[in-house]
Length: 312
Image (cartoon, rainbow, N blue to C red; front, side):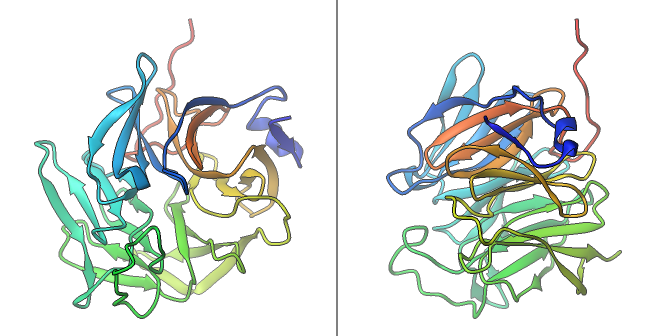
């Protein structure tokens, strides 16, 4: 059964017979993975990263999967800012940048205190335009053998909306990976995908956009599960439930951090909400792109009003 119901609360999210659909396969190279899905609502299509293919792919209902861009410096996580511009993390060029409406590229961050970043991995943009991203340690094959580490730790960073300031706001995680905000943006969730940790951490967000490090707490501990997969991509729905890849599929946690159910399947990597009503969860596997229809809308990207398609 694709849906594992641990609590009755999961039945408000998925039907008993819900199943996921494979939309395409053959991405990510021999090691995988496909990554960074993001829904472009006004165009009705999904973009996602083929990391080791050094390309960005596009999926549409009419044409399936086609090439969107070749040459991405092994792009990974992607999202959109309040103006709808695409914000992308790149492993090989060790940066986060933004694609403008005219196709030009604006650098968001490639260094901290004069030292090159490790390999920016995942990114989220707050409704005020500030950009938050994870920067795990260098790791072959995600970074080249000649890639010399310059930062003395992995980190989570915040860049101001005007791009004038960059701050490392979290520095005690081993392998910071996926991140997302609660619907009201009062909590920042960050997972640590180190194989010895497999944790999702939660932090209170202060009025200035920084996190209260004293509030750091374990939101969910995924250790002890003898199944493939671990914490990586992460999203929330409008009711505050947290969705995170984990052992055996995509785990769903309620706002209290209780594991209420899972979308089961092979190694799942990253995810994005999509379609007009934001009720479809698109997700990548090691080498695939997939989707499943759920009952509760996700938080839109760019963050905004959920528009539900009228039923005929």
